[in-house]
Image 1 (spheres, rainbow, N blue to C red):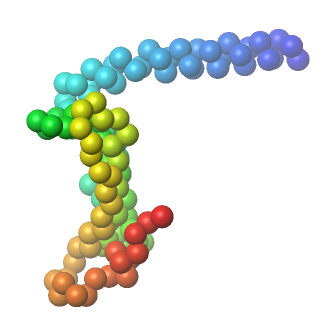
Image 2 (image 1 turned 180 degrees about the horizontal axis):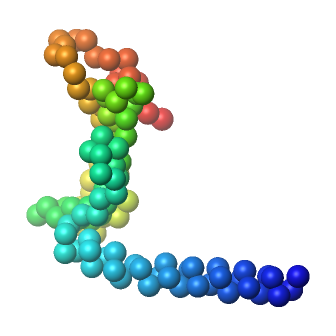
Image 3 (image 1 turned 135 degrees about the horizontal axis):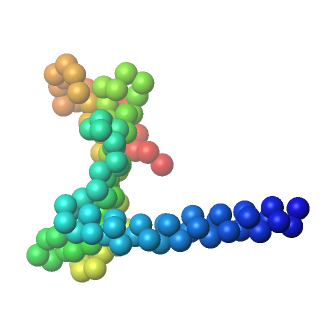
Length: 115
């Protein structure tokens, strides 16, 4: 039993070490491309990006996901966890695609913000 714990500890240490070794690679990709995207579908993806404005610099995280089952509405959340210069406000939005509707006809999904 003791040998099992020793092996599990070594395995966990290797996983943590690989995580640390991947950080410089992720930073290089982020600096060279300006963003890292996860997901091929634009209606369901996550994106880590660099904000480089004259008075604001930092990292932002955008998460877009379907707001309903038939994927006509998407809910997007943008967060700025690390700001090097200036301040940025987090935001959330809902966008529905399909038939043209009047501005007063907001779908119920987009009326209530996500908690």
